[in-house]
Each structure stands twice: as structure tokens, then as C-alpha cells.
Length: 322
Ligand SMILES: Cc1cc2nc3c(=O)[nH]c(=O)nc-3n(C[C@H](O)[C@H](O)[C@H](O)COP(=O)(O)OP(=O)(O)OC[C@H]3O[C@@H](n4cnc5c(N)ncnc54)[C@H](O)[C@@H]3O)c2cc1C
Image 1 (tube, rainbow, N blue to C red):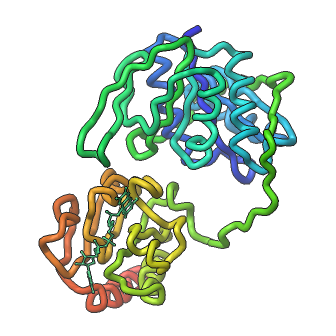
Image 2 (image 1 turned 135 degrees about the vertical axis):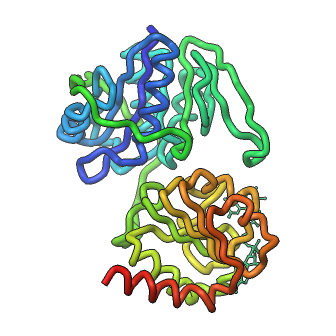
């Protein structure tokens, strides 16, 4: 078989927007392999969500439903087990999806059980089983070819356009799906309470760096964020210093984002930070030092202290919004 199975994620009964770039990558791979695109929806009772996804199709032939009580809350062990079961029963040539924290965790385990090679965080589909991916935090691009009956990949969200709705797909229930937790049990989940969009799904991201000096100073960034309906981000130096929670970190070892508008405030632009935001459509940098590397990729740069500029910017945006 030369079909591609893309594992998608759901939230509040709907497809998570961050799964869309992975579907695009899967469609490109299916075209290169001369096969069909199939989607896999996992959860305790994901039937209704799967039907919604199938109605939009996204270029897929079939949306497969893997329902099992052990798939919620998420554990990488149970999801890996279900992905393996689905891959074996469908006999696909490739399995993948967007490189989200969920798939980064579950897919390598599934690949190990299947004895399949995995290309993580790919940035391009170069051919059947041939992928492009960044190495050394984006200093070089490697082209890698995987060999095997089945190969696995995760796609970097910022490098593939979100899949668009198309002709409806069919829905098929996967019978006898297993989901063994292999000793891992989630005892509790404390969700971040935020009215803001998820960092990886926001159209506007406002990030602060070490130059913000302390957590309380992020308040002015939060004001700008909320006026623009965006998500708050940060450099690793800012999260490591405890100014803001670690889940706001953007970069090589944090979230990879590609919003329409990215503000980098008091961030120097280290290559590891750029790896997580350089594909943003418009980048605005505010930094007191005009020599910093962030200005090399910024579309708009302001050499100034944030203390002197951000409150005024907030005022202007507020006035413009009425
Ligand atoms: C393996 C590895 C992985 C990493 N992963 C990540 C990652 O995922 N994300 C990430 O961000 N980093 C990551 N890093 C760290 C990265 O190398 C940098 O150390 C970090 O990005 C620096 O953060 P920063 O720009 O906030 O701090 P700094 O480099 O200290 O820059 C602070 C900036 O603030 C400016 N500034 C100071 N005061 C003001 C002011 N009043 N007004 C305006 N500007 C001001 C300064 O001019 C300076 O440019 C990683 C490093 C390694 C080794």
C-alpha cells in the first residue's frame, strides 16, 4: 500500500487547528507515493468530531475513528498503541502529523514498536520517503531518505500551509483498537486558565525576553496581546528566569509558531529563538540595541527601550480600536 495516515487531534469536539499543517504534509507525501490520504482521530468517543472532520474532508479519502476509553486523558503509551493498531490494520506506507507535543511524544513510541524509521520536524516533502529538515537550529537543511515498509514523520507546523476544506471524506470505525497504558496513569491535569488563543494557533504572538527584567513587566505585553487578540510568548531566558510559565517558550526547545504578526520585545534573536518564529509573516522587533540579530529578520524594527515605547503603542492601538 502507498497510503498515508495522518493522526489529527481534537479539542472541544472539533479538529485542532494545529493539526492542519500536518494534513498538508501528509497530502504531499501521499501525492509523492501515489497513494491516498487517510486521517486518524483518537479519543474516548471521537465519533462526532470525526464526522465533522470528514464533512470538511481536507483532501482525505477516509477519516478513521479509534475509540477507546484509555485514550483520554492522553498518554503517549496508549496513543502509541492505538496508532500501531491502526497502522497495522490499514496497512499504510507512512504515518505522521503535525509536530505537536502530543505527536512528538506518541509517534516515536509507535515507530519503535513498528520498527519504522522516523523523520521528526520535517520542513519539506522532497519525494516518496524523502524529507527535508533543519539541523543545528536551522543553520543547515538536511535531506533524509527513509527506508522501510512503513515510515513515520512529524511536520513542522510553520512550514506547511493549513489544509483547506474540500470534498467530504467517509468515516470508518476501526474495530478492536487497543490502547494499553503500559503502567502510565494520569493522576491529574491542571489546565492553564487563559482566554487567549493557544500559542501555536494564534494569528498574533507578542513575546518578551530577558530585557523585560521581571514577570510584572510582562503586564504591558499582555495588554498589547489582548488588544490584538493574540497569544503571549517568551524567550527561553525569560521563562528560565521564571518571569512567565515555561509553556510560553518559543524556539527550538519550545513552541514553533508562524503567526501573521510576531512581536519580539527585548529579545536578542538567538538562533534557537529564531528557530521557533522565523516563519512568522510579519516580524516586529523592539530592542534597545540596534546591533542585535533579531533586526536581521525583522520586517519592522524599533531601536528603543520597551519602557519608552510599549505603553505608547498600547495607547495607540487602544485608540485605533475605539
Ligand atoms: C540547546 C539550546 C536550546 C535553546 N532553546 C531555546 C528556545 O527554544 N527558545 C529561546 O528563546 N532560546 C533558546 N535557547 C537560548 C538562546 O540561546 C538564548 O539564550 C535566548 O534566546 C536569549 O533570550 P533573550 O533574547 O530573551 O535574552 P538575551 O539574549 O539576554 O537578550 C535580551 C535582549 O533584551 C534587550 N534589552 C534589554 N533591556 C531592554 C529594554 N529596556 N528595552 C528593550 N530591549 C532591551 C537587549 O538588548 C537584548 O537584546 C536555547 C539554547 C540552547 C543552548
